[in-house]
Image (cartoon, rainbow, N blue to C red; front, side, top):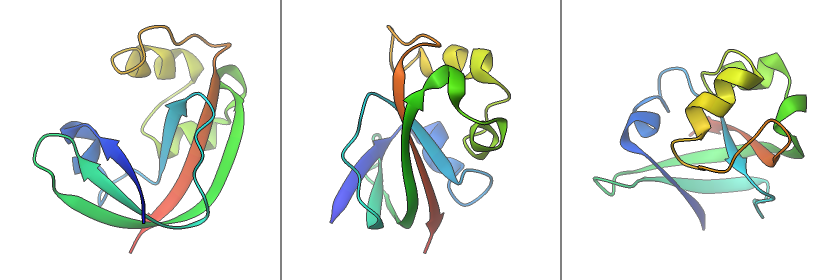
Length: 101
């Protein structure tokens, strides 16, 4: 089964408000089941991947940003820079939308 790692604070949001994850670069994620793994505890949540899209961070819709608890592209840069120090508004990203099963 495919998998992605999530920081503890992002992992906690899976069952609360998070229904998308935005990753820097072009990630090879397929529709279907995926395991999210907590990088600290090793806990796992299984999700069904609904869609995978590629674009520049600048062009991510506000709706998709909200699904990853972000307000706008500038806020996304501020949040994602913790994980991707070189990310900019022009960076290519992968938007992965999911539902927890």
